[in-house]
Image 1 (cartoon, rainbow, N blue to C red):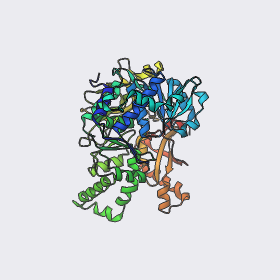
Image 2 (cartoon, one colour):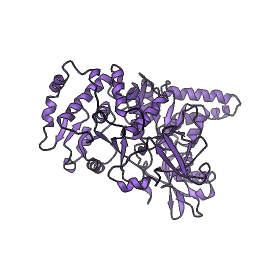
Image 3 (tube, rainbow, N blue to C red):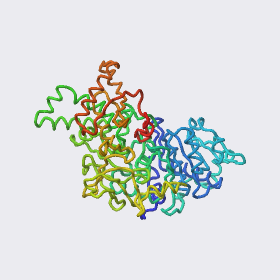
Image 4 (cartoon, one colour):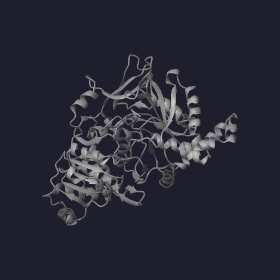
Amino acid sequence: MVKENFIRIYEESFRENWSLPALTDYAKGTTYTYGDMVTRIARIHLLFEECQIRRGDKIALIGKDSAHWCMVYMAAVTYGAIIVPILQDFNPNDVHHIINHSESVFLFTSDRIWETLEEEKIEDVRGVFSLSDFRCLHQRDGESIQKFLKGLDERMEEKYPGGFTKNDIRYADLPNDKVVLLNYTSGTTGFSKGVMLTGNNLAGNVVYAKSLDLLNKGERELCFLPLAHAYSCAFNFLLPLAVGAHVYMLGKVPSPKILLKAFEEVKPNIILTVPLIIEKIYRKMILPQLSKRTMKVALNIPFLDDRIYAQVRKKLSDALGGRFREVIIGGAALNREVEDFLYKIKFPFTVGYGMTECAPLISYDHSDDFVPSSCGQVLQGIMEVRIDSDDPYNKVGEIQVRGENVMKGYYKNKEATDAVFTPDGWFRTGDLGTIDHDNRIYIRGRSKTMILGASGQNIYPEEIEAKLNNLPFVMESLVVEKNGKLVAMVYPDYDTVDSTGVSHEDLPVIMEENRQALNKVVAPFETVSEIQLYPTEFEKTPKKSIKRYLYSNY
């Protein structure tokens, strides 16, 4: 058990950082200090008390990342309730199912999402509240929530006649072994399950991250990944508020153009991102410069290449605000060409590994220690790893872990819980890989996406896709098995196609050239028989992994 109590971490941080800025809605320009945030949390606690919300009751939360989203999350867990954050990309039927399956009694949501939901399908919910201003959007028959909210200001004055102060912060006395979070994963293999995460799981991540000194009191972080996802929640929200940092919520679609403007203005001290975003910046900002003929010639001149790479590194660092210690990439595999280039120019980045069931962190290396193609060392003192292989250093096997961060199980799903743990208590990640003698993890692919070749070879489609995505006019790809052969679906990079004057009618010929080039750099059993053009971007999870199961029968 982690020594630090999860709720006490925030009780102490909020008192200590009362006057510092805590949360900013970047798109609106609205900033809340820790004191502002905590006062609003106190108002929500009064609502919970009035409605006799009990410890362990579930509070559902769905909407765009915002300061109010963070306040509701923190209000629920510090009260002793269980927060149920729902990814806003889920369709209404999935949202109904999650609210009912979790047995949530309250729902906080954006007005837009509420318009898509049907109250008769979530009839056990006692009250629904707007994330824009916390007004009551709906109350179950017999409830008097709307009446109470009209007098909430007076109730606050009665309870705190001198105004709410940092000395009034008193949160639930909840042991770390209690569940505080039900996280319904998006997943890439089908409908999600409710991951039960305890205070200990979350504290394990936060305490470890604090020990790295990556983010300190008064520093800044820009959040542009969905907070309902475990990766973003832990390190864009829970970590900053534990150390007294200032989080800016982007509140917009994170296109490279919007992101680069925000980086310039916020100048974050640490950056968390997913591969897709860093790959887009590389392709749009760096690759065009490297592809110029004069640049190619210069890079072949001894000693000149180092100076050019230093200039590229500075340009990229300045574009990301210029003040960050490192860029942490997670959520999916980073394209190997992009990774090799960033490593070559000595850009301060690292690739971590985790999953929702571990709240989420499993392995991490500081950028100074990062080894290309790895995803860091297993967290020392927090987690353990083993490979289900007779030679874990050389032969691929399933990655299995255990430790402080591993979930309690799947909510109301004993069968799925039993299936994901080995008889001796190790969590089966479903990922395939090897380790080195420093317990550094190297991932090869997902066990569920591995394709068995005609002669029994293990084929990892992600590795083929990484090579294909580096070829001309390929935005993204998906390799599947069809009638015993490998077929690649490709969504073209139409922006580049149009900017270079290439006709769309020529794309099949270009893709055939790409196929031939690809087959020269993959193993004979990995050769692709056909490239099919796909009309739209592939549907993705919030962490930007392609939902492979949707295309298995394409």
